[in-house]
Image (cartoon, rainbow, N blue to C red; front, side, top):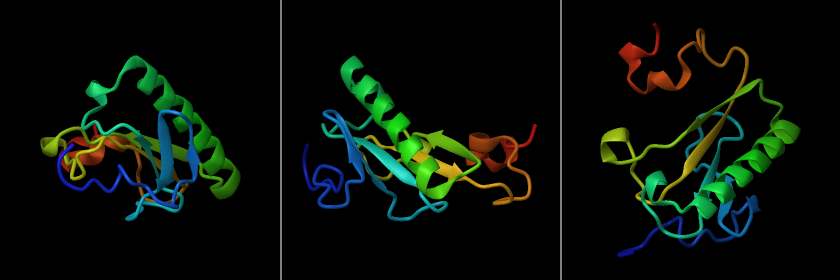
Length: 123
């Protein structure tokens, strides 16, 4: 890695962790409880993760969902990865968004993650 990466030095903001990854709250949350699941090794893309890292990320994502269910009681979740600048990735260290969703947080949530291209969300 070259330069400074904010996800390579997480500091005291870790909520959960395992050998491969850690979770922290998003600095600019979409909804209350918005968490990021981040690999400890600096990799830019989900497709660069090893099978062991993928298993660690998925395991921590499950624990993060349990954490949010207990503390925030959401009605659903969006899970997403912005992989590459064309997909909106701005921090070039892989991170998985776990976004709690609440009944009524938007008028019509149908289409969910398809909303990354607004004209394609509704079908």
